[in-house]
Amino acid sequence: MLSFIIHPCTIDHLNQYGAIHTAAFSGEPWNDDWSLENSTIHIRELLEHQQHYGLECLVNGEVVGFILGTSMLFHYGRTFEINDLAVAPKYQRKGIASRLLEQCLTDLKEQGIVGFHLITAREGALPAFYEKFGFKKEERVMLMGTE
Image (cartoon, rainbow, N blue to C red):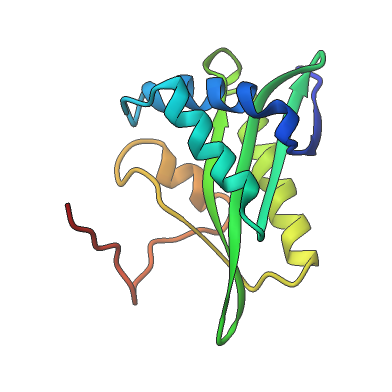
């Protein structure tokens, strides 16, 4: 069994987060074309957000995964959006994402967060992964976009 430690995210590990983000989202199911530069900018923007929260996972002192998002106040209370949950490909399917998500949900519920949301792939293993933690498809809202 893999031994790992979970800590709050720190700007000091920005480059490691950027590299993990690039590698994780370049593969299945996303196959996105993230450059290291753009991943690092994306993560920096989240870390600099006033209402951010994040956790990192370390194995033998090496950052191998992270969860990062932001909260926002609505009329019914503060909600949290998980913007990124990423694990370095060679450490995927070892329980790291589950531990990061569990710790995130526990911490933020204790801080009074009333709801969580995220965007994920419609098909594949990810919907079932998030359903294990109580997430479900929204019935009352839908994601809309424009180019």
